[in-house]
Length: 308
Image (cartoon, rainbow, N blue to C red; front, side, top):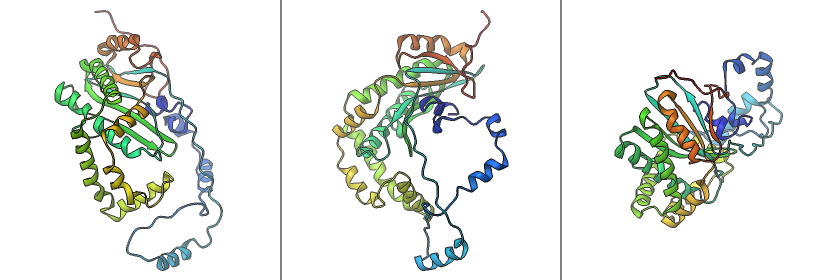
């Protein structure tokens, strides 16, 4: 996860920068003061949830912040991601008992009109315990304690990722199975039972998003963050109920790539590299080949192992 952003968004992208000892040491007190000077009220948003009315709240806030003035900076325009095309990245951890694998690519914006269909599609593929990925790698193969997949949203878009921590000797097999499940999700219709299961779970879980003042605040703050209307939840249940398996298939075809994935594997190269090299040669995930990184995301030479 440390290097994932740098390969799926691009190393120079704001979402792709890796924090290191050196970058932390470079921060000065002047840098911190300059950042604080950007905090201004005009253009900012304040969220309050609780047993308080607007008149009382305004009185308390004006007493404390009445002299705080100035415009907040405009939000930074987030560039499109520039991931490596179809490249497998490997980080060697000697004698690792498991391999951590992630497969993915950039995804849709949070405000896309088929958000609900995409949400249900991702749940069927890898978002729940009963998902296809978990049933395959955990229940059927016994290679992992769990496997997951889905979309992670930011203000500037999203990324799709699917992965797991798997038994070292099952690394190559797990990569192939995940690739297979993604392609099946893209190219076939889900079952009515799968859709019904995920819809019911999502609908039943909705009240929890408003079960406390804090959760309620986060729900509405997130809507503003993604530039969504504050009445977005009013029609959410109806939009879910309107979904059918055709909508799920269409979302999968639209938002799951057929090729040019980014793959990150962390594990014991002495065990897993021969199979990873085969997968790279087969171009299962794309044409980019197999590259090697250190834990800070820097390119390194392939690890060398003594002859048997």
